[in-house]
Length: 212
Image 1 (cartoon, rainbow, N blue to C red):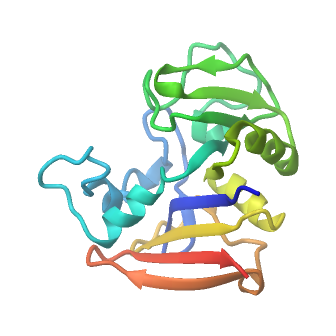
Image 2: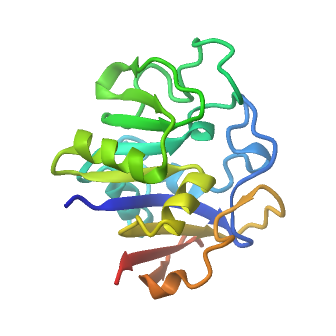
């Protein structure tokens, strides 16, 4: 059976995976891009341009795409709107060619028509439990794995339901103080996942948990 994976999920020292006050201009609220500077500077993120960093940060960044056939994300990762869709003009943060290049299942209590984008990404907006969404994503992914893309609440739900096989969290040495915390309600997670960690020259610590 395909695996369920989380990659490059950055959190602050105090456990916040996003800041407070998300808007269209600030997808991560007051955290801005501080959680992701380690990745933005890598050669993979820059499209293999000259001058991008290599090493451990780049290796973890590149693993994000390997062997993924579908993604599941929460509505707040797709966009800043809440409640019923005011219109269908919003097409995501990423422009007309999002970086996923797979089917993407967006969890929402307000479904809307599928949104087909360039590059092989199609957003499917579904009102489903984590288990139901995973069943749909696995059917779309075939023999490939399913990535749980975030945001915080979506990753936490899948961890709470014991549906994650591979968890990659990046601890960034900043304090946010407010926002959405990843670890709340997940006491004893180490009983289900075996953890290893490595600290990169950039100062972040990569923590990888794999199913025991």
